[in-house]
Length: 171
Image (cartoon, rainbow, N blue to C red; front, side):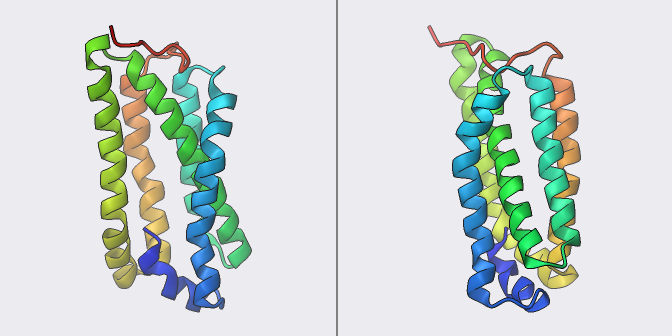
């Protein structure tokens, strides 16, 4: 969602456009490092609190990003948000396989990844449209707010005692 916001962020935080582009790289690095790190750390946690913690971290990083008046702080929120996002995805993929019968494991994973793909595809144009009308900070507020339905989904779908490390393998 960030690509269309970079000129406004660059202008508002008084950094050149190339430096603002590092925000995208920071998110990518956070995802690459965060997925294995968070999967290793959270595998001992029950899935529900692990997923909720990742969602909370993701939401908080976006709230701080919306309030950031300093480029370094915004850059840090991108890394932390990506780590939370990677953790959520790693745990959600593992958890999804435990919530359905073995013959539906592939479907559960594909639905989860389809949602992630749709968010990536829609994120840039939607973020650019929203940011052009309400300012770049509004996009971060909206993303933080979108964590609420995700929290409700986790609370309704993931049992309290569900652990992320017990996936079923298809027969």
